[in-house]
Image (cartoon, rainbow, N blue to C red; front, side, top):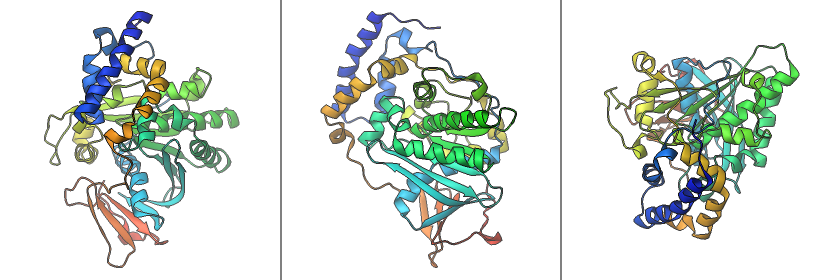
Length: 383
């Protein structure tokens, strides 16, 4: 385990400001900045720290469900673009009603609740990082804590507890990037409620993350610094990531991880930069559409860049204040209306919007409008 002296941490802190300023001045992307910053850390800070990922009671999700949860992870951004007419989603052979939206402008938190038409599942999809949003960037710098303590996050968790405990529904959380960390925190809170309500019940909360930011730190902050192994046992948490992704190496996770070689739309291996590897839709959907590629995933924690989590824990609020003072929004841009992933088209009747997220010519997800209900012909058997 890595033990760091105060002088080393202070040295890393003093080095961080010029690195961030230099990157901002060069107009680099946030992910490229993160990768360059990590590479510039002192050698001891580039390895794991003393807080590894924590195992959960299970860490198994079928490829088909992984495809569904990955697609749903992008829906909060999608529904923000399409507006209030969106009432449901079809992905693979699963159909969901859009039951609730959770938003907090101050922290940037956004999530959507889905109710399955087919098996009664309730799925909470948490939006990931919008790098044009100062609020999201500041949440990343604090390892998701600002959004995990927002009133909208609390409302989402309360609804998830009701669905699991009072209604007896299967509950799942999904999210990419920042949303993956928040999904871990939400899953833990609901697992805690299930354990308290039914100590003898063997059911678990499902958590699925795509290239997730580590969720352990925010979960510990919300629970007086300690996570109960008995609660973790009530979680089935699995995260998927591309080998070159950096964000999933910041902080540690709740649950297991599958790492995949990045591929193109045809499934051929490709080399991607840290920026291009993060939530790469083409690679993700190609992998989750192939039994062989999914089976080739390597199980095990990603090699955490401990210094990034240590800096975030020690100086996150200070860096957040500094970036706010420096008007980071002027560098990365002010929030803009969410863009639709890939390509898509509106049905001429106005009943639905089809999304080809990876632009390969196949529909990956269908958003229903105006109360349209799914029928047999609508179910897209693509997963």
